[in-house]
Length: 293
Image 1 (cartoon, helix red, strand yellow):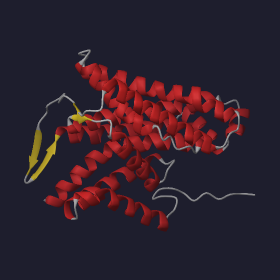
Image 2 (tube, rainbow, N blue to C red):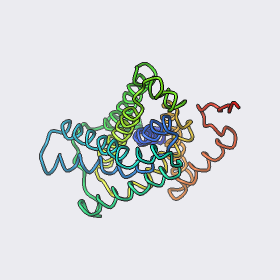
Image 3 (cartoon, helix red, strand yellow):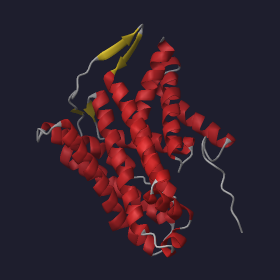
Image 4 (cartoon, rainbow, N blue to C red):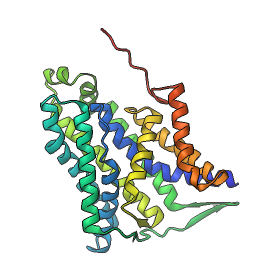
């Protein structure tokens, strides 16, 4: 029973982390760029929802929608203002990576200035209670988090693999110059990819804040690292891989904390990541790329 309870707890929180991993995966799949600002947008999404709920007294769904649109819009703005000029100058991907680090730092400091450093209580919006199955306790919030993650991954998978927009994303991922010659509006599609990726991250921040009923600016670093690790573990650039990596890391970390100690949770997760990458460098669902000359 204890093992099953830990499995459920691990699946829950890492479902939300999987959304952040999807944000990494969306951008990397198109540009082969790791967006290191995701952790900052994750926290910002939670804080925005909290402000709309408590200060403006909005309905939760309206508050969440506004938070999603703002975080997504800021992600798109980040691409337009900071990253698009770098691409046009044919600068290295390292320059773009450093730019995302700087932007993430700026967003984090904005949060610190305007929202403060203290931990803030997040209201129990639904207060749906718990389900008891023998000795196992499952909260409705856990079910909601898992369901939202699965639904969003399914919708994004449909967009990427079944729509004209997704076809454009995949074409840019293979060869951006060739895609442009074929009439694809590469800049618009890339900006939209950033919008989708950061929107998912903002939703994750709100879900985790609801689960713990609190939000803290220090969440950004830990979530950013774990979510990136989850994306790499599953196969970065592969949407189902982000989900699988997040869930697997969560379960192993939860079991490790319970049976070995809370201080070793992160270490166990990253040791597992290293082992998997030694055996399969492309990740669990990733495919080895063949370079043709």
